[in-house]
Length: 115
Length: 115
Image 1: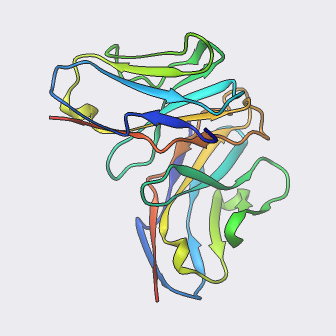
Image 2: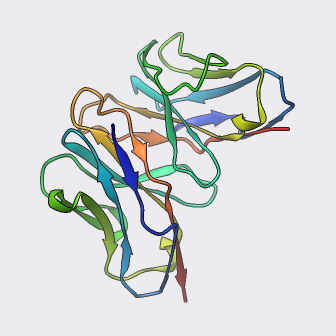
Image 3: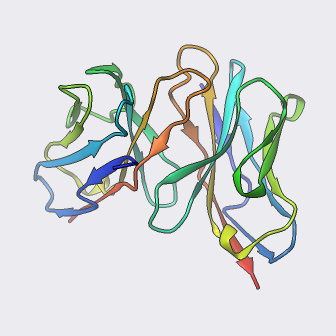
């Protein structure tokens, strides 16, 4: 597709369960980002990939969160032992690179609700 | 460390009136500054960005913003509001150096346009 695609768009899970959120970036974009947006807040940075490697994962809140991008395209954000506080919109974004001229394109997000 | 403060979580204007959304930032290095818009059930869309060129930046849909270093501000304006401008607006900052990929967002301002 033309934009960043995220699946599922909505996910309801029980506390303690494992969740995977998928992101399909714009074709050809080498940089991929995950952000989290809680209710009433702006998006918060989680992790940044350049190609297949996580160049900066300083925003991941704890070791229950992990993300991969094995072939440098699609990425999966994985959350183990989910907690109610993990409920948020998880936004994926991509860009051609990271220079000042690059624009970061966001997907519509995956709404995660932990009950 | 960087931060963004958006004054006013909700701004209401009449159609045809001036739109002014306020953003102040804090950054230890020269910043890059951005305004994003989020329409209902859509992803974040870049309105405009400042990357150390002209201080007055023009964006899409008639919006513009002026970088004022002395005031650490990057307020968003539009001379005449249209009903289609109703959305949530986010101001964001990134470093101009090696971490320019990492955006720090404000909490957002919801713009309502009254007929």
